[in-house]
Image 1 (cartoon, each protein chain N blue to C red):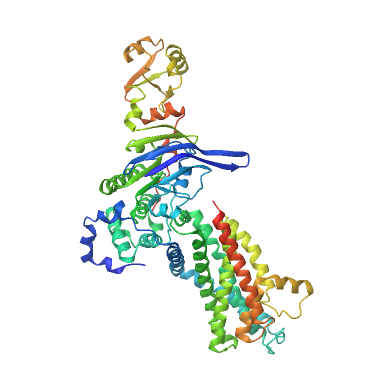
Image 2 (image 1 turned 90 degrees about the vertical axis):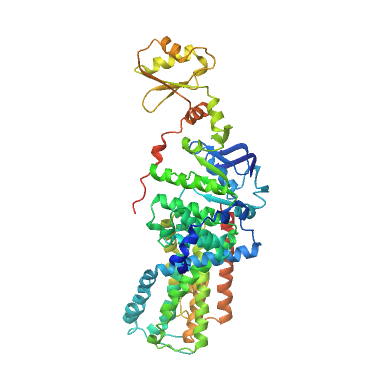
Length: 290
Length: 323
């Protein structure tokens, strides 16, 4: 958003000229129709998140570390002891590290997206949320803008991990990589909605973090990111079916390795229904909040 | 520009409910500089919340520029620029990016945003710092940037909610110079809330608000005039004896005697007595250390109408952020 041309010394005298007419009360910008305002608002909120993300790119690299620890340390430690992983559909088996790779891609999207919801709490704490709330756009647009911003962040994180796939003997065709990308978008949107849902009413970012930590690990562990889903104890099998992440991870693994435990349509249906429910609920709650 | 008609806001609390705004009505004319003066918790910020459609009135109506706020929230918001009591900038963005964000939300096209932002930054003395992150700004600079932001979409009504809260005296003066300068040039309507009496003194009309009600509404000059011509200030050892004597001798004073921060007793000259200040002082049977006479200020007006004190405004001040 920086405007380099204004730095040119030639432009400066113009700025100093008497331009009060620009802000006379009679030059109030006319109000656009609802659709235009909301789309503009969504874009503006998203753009702000992207600028902030770019400014904090060091942190982007920092959060790259945790998935690497899982892949290289946990993966290397467990692989020699664990036999070929597979089962389910796809008729293929893989070494443990290669098997867990799609799960770790999903994990990095999941973790980043979950904590995106804290941004709305930070904005409330910093007072910036008020600036957004008194602007002429609907609260629905605010929530959608925040969901898109958070999802963008998490998909970038996931893509960084995904780019390591050649090291894990995964060379899927381009179409499947595009598929995996779309799945990351879906997981990102879903989990950001969950984060926003929690953030909508919260006034303390610490409270948000504590609550999110309670939610995020069960979601991750039950999702089958780290193990095959076909021979689970009965209770865990049920728990994993209730976990929306299960379907996201299954889709990712299907796209990248061919191994899957549910059909693509079942996965997409489950994940997108969950996304719809969470996003509508957060929009509803945000509209009702004072 | 602003018309409030019997506006009420009731908050539900654990112990029942609280009438934060309790049936206020007022009218602010086009181009007027109107102030709400009252202590913290009087209902000033709640009123603003209803003006910008952040809070729904429990009952009553408020309209801005002829538009009912509840029915046309976005039409109204487009016409309002607001400086909040608490900082509301994104301090991880630059000053320029904050303005771009705002301009986009209010539907200004690119070139228009740039022209207005550059001009206003120049006017507020911030142009050189436009590409700096807001977190490097001092409290006073942030406030000025918020004023720029509040003006970018050329609002018809500028709302200033305690605009100098938390600023040191130098920054406060500085911020006011900028506000007055803009008002002189642009002539938009200004709605100010404050508990600094001297800030309300500069406005066309002042509404004194206490416990959610408007207790007085007039120009600062007329409000002061309503107090009588002069205020007598007496320094004595035996304060209670002096109070008792004054109330016995001049019953109309019972509500308006107060103690100044320096420990002296002050009160407006009573209308009911023909005594001159000098005659009054001679009647007092108590040893007087010092006595002085001054014209009433808004402080006295406030005491008269609310029976309370605004407190020492200095206690609300925080040192300006160190860069």
